[in-house]
Length: 288
Image 1: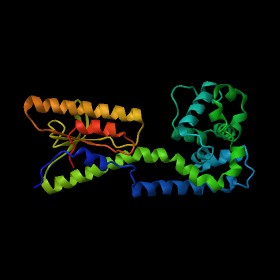
Image 2 (image 1 turned 90 degrees about the vertical axis):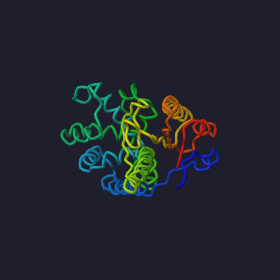
Image 3 (image 1 turned 120 degrees about the vertical axis):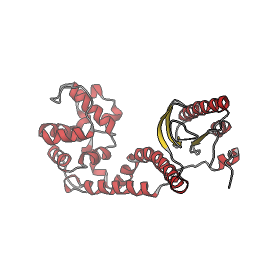
Image 4 (image 1 turned 180 degrees about the vertical axis):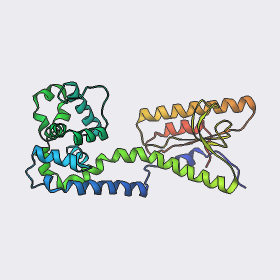
């Protein structure tokens, strides 16, 4: 039976990943792009169509992904669009009191209920850049995207690229969950084969939420944290600091009670400086 050991720094560095490639996630995004392209093929907004406000209003109400397609075509994020809708509410141009920001699903529901709102949003998407009042409140970088009338004629050839680029956030957000799921699958296999349980949740031992605790969060002997992501240099520093703090709590507990609890930190490495990886390696006990 092999003995658990800490990887050498060279082993840890060489095992670092540059990108996570997950075929299931790739396929999911491709299918989403394909669905958007089908919606974008609607004759009412085709390259040759002379698009009117009425056309856009009908399109964004009748087609489930209609608003998503237009926003991706003009390359305006959902967050910025929702903020502009909030501005219109605050300015009194949408007859709804401004309290909290509407979600995309709520905006779509309101458009279906109120044709006047759908018409206003259609006009915003088609020619919003020429709106004198918006010019006073919206930065030109965003305002100039509210120009579907001109952008529409150039779209068909580049739609696939645009749509995929704008779904990159989905890939980035989801890959962390994918890595956690792979860890979970291995732990479930271990539980079936050896009867060793695991759990997730807040642990009094390290005073934070544990991704995976073996055998449980109340008395964990193996603590597994997953911080897998490509991130900025400042993000690396924050992650390294947080994981180090968790490890130090485990280490103090081990020293005080003469125990051998293990802290396992799953990180990527392609975007990390070698010095940051070294800092992680010097402290947490990493086993595979």
